[in-house]
Image (tube, rainbow, N blue to C red; front, top):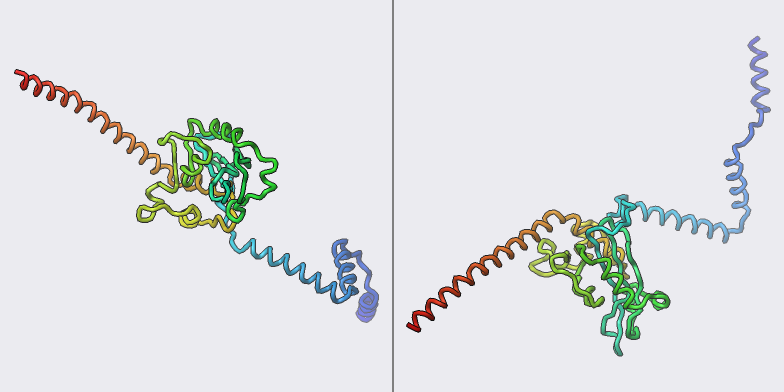
Length: 275
């Protein structure tokens, strides 16, 4: 009957059956209990740690856009185009003479195919850490200059070499490269401002939407930035190179045709004078 049902339900509410607690909730309950029993100083420390963790997480998620300098391919092969960047240290008595301290090569995907610290021939006076990112410990097991120079020469031979102010890097390596195979982002006309070179970090912001060289430089990051700049303008860049070469060849042929005619005219004048 109805009164009987109400009495039964009332007894169930007064003495509910204890359900087994989820292990995760049980663990959390124990942690909360222990947290409440901790001294106030320990609780404040825990709050601070948790707060910092949250702050770091927010900072990372402020910009959800993927970093374009992070390679999206796992291809580490030696591609037809390679980007190079070098970091320098200071040698000579005043440390104002630059010497190679690190060299990095990346392939067209931005994957590192060579990255070595270099032991200069002369004694290092200034590591220029605030810019180069190189520290004394980095050069303790560095390779000799001659070994690195030979390897880099092998890797770049016959390939398109990309970089920013490549003349400085090649000079530090005591190497040369065919001019037709150089793709220098400091000299490419669309990257110039009123005929003057822009810094690589400025080009990275303007054309790639990414900030680099915030403090110490990283040769891997810089090489990737140069390669990505080249890849973004590759079609028109290569066309301009071909057009330039074609124009030079045309001018050369014209000069070759012009020389015999000039010679003939010279002979004719000489013959007329002699007679």
